[in-house]
Image (cartoon, rainbow, N blue to C red; front, side, top):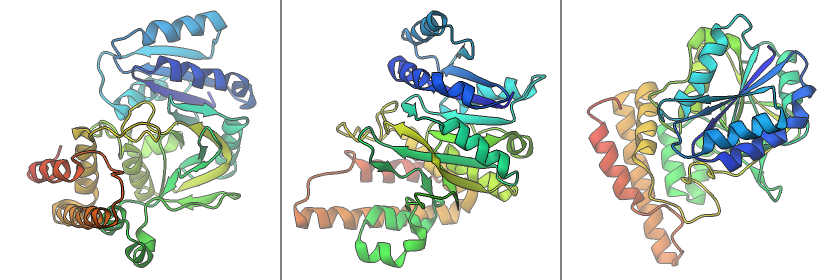
Length: 321
């Protein structure tokens, strides 16, 4: 098998079906065989029935529905599909993680696989994401560090200028492939050799930071990550989780977001630098909120964010989540 595509569904059958429909003309653009597995994270609604019915009705022989026994999160759902594929008699050369809230644009799969074939040294690559209106979504990033936490929370021009090398969401070149620290898990292709060297996604991350962690572990094992702008998808950011959706009133941030962030910092920076990152984020955010009040800006952040950040992180300092 050339390519295994994994889509994790949780109560978003409509989005998943739209994603599958966009894959129909793309399956045959990749030579060597493509399979799609839709892992359902115990949705508890009619997701499995809806998606399976569409697979049968449209004769999508390349797609397989995989109902799971529990909702173990994004990493868990992907791993449940990847693990048996890697252990099979015909393991995929590449695994492509694809969000259900995406629409694959023409030649997206072809461009990613062509790039990976031409660069056997590259372990992970991701494509360009755009919104429904064609506006660019940043989908290639620098690793989070304690200083990036200050820059990202204070959101002040002078600080960002000083810490420009620590800005996580830095736009990548729009026309040529380029090396980056990590790419969004909404559209991420991974060489089989990476799994064989570092293992699967870390299931201690329920959602968020799992792709950041995976790309960091891959880099530490000698597998660089690249951004490939010729591979394009439409990404309805946060439509499946509701946490970062651009078109809705933001929800209060869930506990698992704080746990995932803490696990990432604790895993890669140790306890002391994790606490430093927390202090820098909280201090920067407090300054940002004061400036918002003085400038009478409307609230742009989830409710209770600073309180939840302090509460959850202080309770997490004593153990690994």
